[in-house]
Image (cartoon, rainbow, N blue to C red; front, side, top):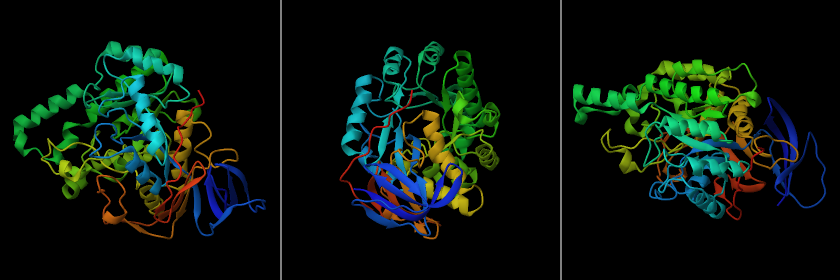
Length: 447
């Protein structure tokens, strides 16, 4: 089906202008102040609303295969689309982990059948699968990157062997994404506080002290040293500390950077002060830390030392999150509300709408060299979102689409609404209703 969106404020490449947008055969065919086209199309009145490129989330955990009691690619991609996220890149720590080419391709097959959003999946790195990882070089135009957990993870995915790290950083032709927390520092801190207060008395308030600033900084520094040694393409995920910001630069345009960084919405929004009210619901790795880190992250985002805004969407069941601190898993479901959260910060004056689009849409496309997405441009895929900045959205059980059924924003009212989401030209979501007659597409890369 083809569409014309009339008289809408198009937010794209640093400007906002009122235009008509014609979507034909899955792509943006024409954009102009006034359009006259022939043929069949559906018209949408965009007056008073804004059209944004679809959000590209470069870090999610959709839990399939193996952890489908928490989430599935179907449920979480659907939630993503409802929140204006049209493309995602999913992490390899499923069960089994995506540590072989065959297991990685299995996830693509699941997404091809079930994902309402566009998709890509990271190849996982372990201490003993270097040859498998480097086979990914032959498919670098089809896979978003390789993922290294340089901190604790599930199963066999903690990579702490420097020989392995050197082989990956020297041999990978793909972007290397890293989770950076130093495992030795974390273990030492945990033992210290177990001795001091007793394991049974540890609560989530200890989380940012155990997984502290030093653990993040030392691991990020190590990753950067490897990347500089081999001129690797490094992307460090979910920066959470003020101290780490000194490791990143804004001296080059994003297209020329070899080392880039991401910040997640929960580290921009919450601080350690929120553990008292939200408890384990906001327990995540890296930890949400003292408030001065949040303020520094905002500064680093706005001055372009931090390149991308993402979620690290990581759902767990309500029952799992309500176990005692040491047993409760880390991770927060966020992908449905990330754009709405950033639109709230627009209304608060913390960031401009154009900057939100830059960091959530344009920058992921540039950083990962995604083909024909991330911008509202003639000839590009019509991944786009209509938002109403005058219509509020209250989060409740009835409109949470995650399989886990809960959100840290429950009962919160955002001062905006996502009304329409187009995925590759397919109107997948409209005013609370889904059209699942088409699936998202596999992302391709200009490499």
